[in-house]
Length: 239
Image (cartoon, rainbow, N blue to C red):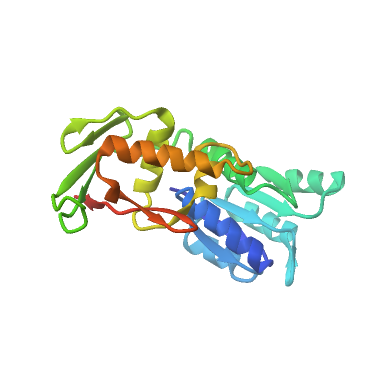
């Protein structure tokens, strides 16, 4: 999980960016102006700053120059300024990427992943072992307590101690939801982030995958359907 600053004065766009990045597993801090960003970066260095160029209290290029002098923080410019000279200025400052509005949220998420992966190379990382989840008896329809093991390194899923064979897409969806317990995730977000596509009517594909996942687990209550929106993982992690 990366720590990301989003500096964008359009409230609706800011909220949408934050939502998509949080669903992708990042911790996001948002700002609607330049004031306070530099100080916040000194107190807790972010892994990436997504920075608009035209803000109510100043120029994002100016802030980027200041930040780059103090710390080597990856920066992605997000702006309506699309001229070649603006792009060149952004990269001369040291931008890791430059995205012009309007843009696809899916594309932005992928560009963020790419920057984070590049910046994290060579850094020590903690091993991520298997996660064990349980579904309390009172939550299960059959009145029994169930367990679910998800081992990302071994790509192994066990339900009540029995290995379950999931397709690559089923695994990705289940692991994605389990990594965000109690968070409601929309079908659109699952399509864009887990299945890598967005198309009219294609939300039915998520319904089909979810039906198959529930069928293999044998217990529907692991994943709650939130009517007219999406799904929520109901398991509780066991330490």
